[in-house]
Image (cartoon, rainbow, N blue to C red; front, side, top):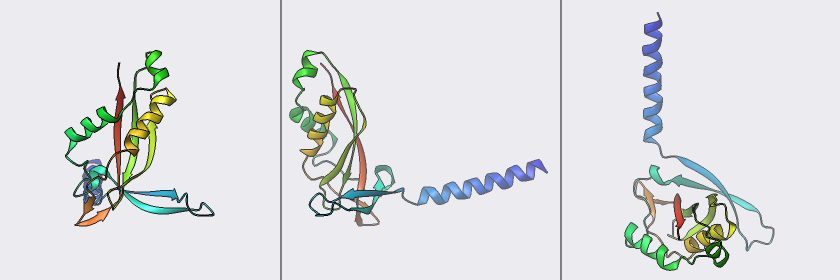
Length: 150
């Protein structure tokens, strides 16, 4: 009896995981338009980076993105003189037009000046190539670490 139950349970788990693997992971994000007079938020559908067919990409690829970060990043004065190092984990959304928005710090470095600088660097990035699902442009959430080392 127990063996039949385990097989049936395993079959159900396999069917559910197969169904979930075939569908893209969605995330509802509430954003506020800073230009609207009443500052009301609106929901948008955002897909996770790993779950889209064509992933968004920095122009020129990963190597170009690393070069851009290294050229744009400025070590904050106080953090430099206090020998503070760290890594800031940021998230942002690549919109259907390639622009980056909703930039946030997911995991702080422990120093607010490093966190602000990481967000500034990401906000200066040029438009990315757009993420797609079944040839339709979609909003995609990306996560990017920015390291500060002396």
